[in-house]
Image (cartoon, rainbow, N blue to C red; front, side):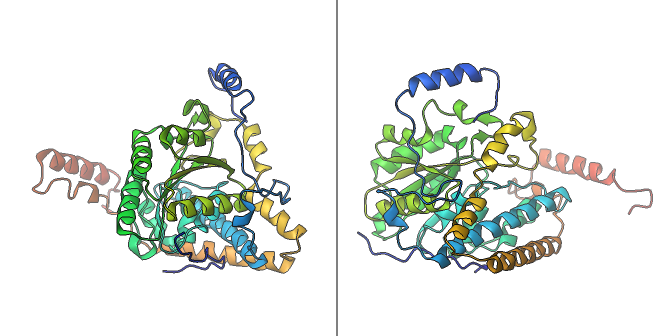
Length: 397
């Protein structure tokens, strides 16, 4: 399957500011004392103002990028954001049961997604809509699960993009096992596993780190640190920056500005190259921000302030690249106008595709729970049927 995308993939290569909460001040003081003189290093190639900065270690991984590819990255982010906004609106209109927005995380996903090769394998969570776009999964196929009409709308092996994983952190184990398998097969490819800062507290992630390090698995652990695990800030997930956790398992970690698509592209290319050439796992922490709610069932105003979001809005990944494109004369107004038209067309196509989907089968949840049926399930089904019937009007319609 293919989607409307022009940003070139990486060529195939041969082997070779926090919201105040109870206890925040004490946590902040402890962290400041512990990290005195050891501020986390942040890889950044493009500043929030859209200025290109030099980096001796990572510049070479984007040295050959063309104006066309830069426009492609920008286009990917714009279209991904438009699709995401449409999905949020569809949920509010009752067309989807739930939606997990990626708003603000476009650079982290597009940059890393475009760093992969066709033969690499991706294990996502449930928010990697931009990575799915890069892997050629049609956006409308992502929405069937959130509408409740399927368990995933694509064949994972057709795009090397696994189905969305709702269980927090479990996909890192799947990715590690798959990576160990391709290493034994002698394949010249890599695996990348996505997870959030909250998932970094899961035991599954720690086990994945252990196994990947011991068996030198060709896997990249890509953590999108969007600062909040639902309502819990990162400081309650880790006493040290997340990327530094890799040291305890014996492999490198790096923190990259997750709103800098060039920086993310470069760092992920580096990490994937390490994996392909037998150097083992890497932990990449994309330091970004979730601009919206955790999901459409969440209310972020209950646990974080407007000033925090406003500070991160100034670091918007799309605006950042646009400033660079304009300053470098790599894109003109016609390009942006055409992209706006294309963006609206994508939104319309997705909206029509969702509304053409069947309504969810309200009783499907009771099927296949037990092979031979179960008295308790039968009782629950009958209770649910009575509940549904209570909504019918007197005429039975």
